[in-house]
Image (cartoon, rainbow, N blue to C red; front, side):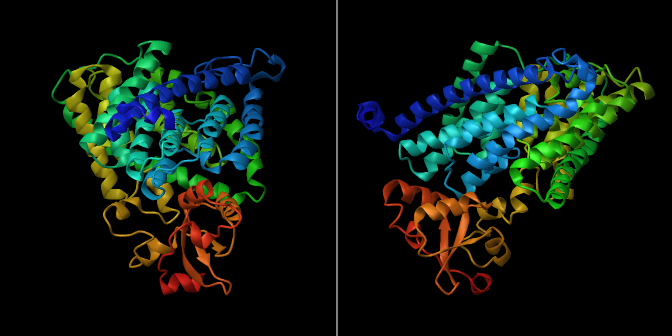
Length: 536
């Protein structure tokens, strides 16, 4: 990269950012395409179909003697493959991915290990192809973000620019996956960067557009889902859309709570090695798929059929509950995949059921079932993720109809407001709060590891400690075995003398001798509150 940066164009930091945002967008777009092909190929390998969710209870044509019971085995086989992979090479690839990117931006200066992109792609493709009821959007966000972070670190950029390029990777991944460049931009700004700056917005737009162009060039200029035409027949529908928004907000919060409650239950029940957990837990997931094969993988065919009004009310509600259970179980057993698509799926089922009820009560004034399904999709996602702009924009891009804006804004804003009233966290921030990390408070300057005034926020993120004389290689190994981005540095008597951050260790490994350099030199030692020192 040194020879390249001698060119006059790259002497300007802004010019370099423009070039890097284009490269990251292209990489994220290609990554999204390859990732999608991997999922389809592995799904066909496991089931005999490119997408099994819409097939019903049919056997795998390659092993017809197993009948429909083969779905019990596919999550087990997939878990045996991706479980050791994640455990050995990148444990942060477990789960739905977006919280890890948010944490990297908030705490680690945007630094993400390069191997995360490869491990996340393989693990998530195996998990989804093997029946995991999760989405492909969370993984591609983590894949694109890891690409952006790695390239920024290779160019030795400062933390602010590393964070910006992480957001560029996330935007490119969403844009190429959904064929929705605007949604990619607002997702990156609203959820990853959690702030708005003119320069950041411009670079993220460049990356998102580049990824979308590449995705369209390879996969075609079609949205990931064919949706019905949207129209409002009567003004009386607006109060109904408002009511749906309130209900959807509650469902979005419930989705988040159930997700982590199931994960807690799995943590409590499992006593074996972590690498084996996805395979053993895959038996439970397989039994769910045996009862409801519509839960296999992402489930876009089922979602599209529901939006088109193809299911009865009872079955729509069963699909809603089934997706929440199947997605929560997939994440709980150690699976790798996103929660973006499952929240859209749940919203479509809720909205379609709501629309069917309205059609039964007021067939002349209620409007189409598809209209309520579309509002439900955006509103449940907004209730779960509390990202109203992203929710509105992505549904607008998917439909291409301006007439959806007013009803969608009404439903999404009410869902977001209800979510704020009943919960202080989102489906993304809750994972971090459970580890004692409040990125909202730190963004407001109310807490953080360098501010000892908030004792709970200071102590909770610390899962372990490391001796001050430990060499850097040992410190890096210690980080690989814990959750969190910080470790306490303790002296020979076990007293806490400071902090060390993961990205500081990685930086020191690149520039110094890994054996002679110690933990206390990896980062600047910081004051430790007495209570924290006492807990050592």
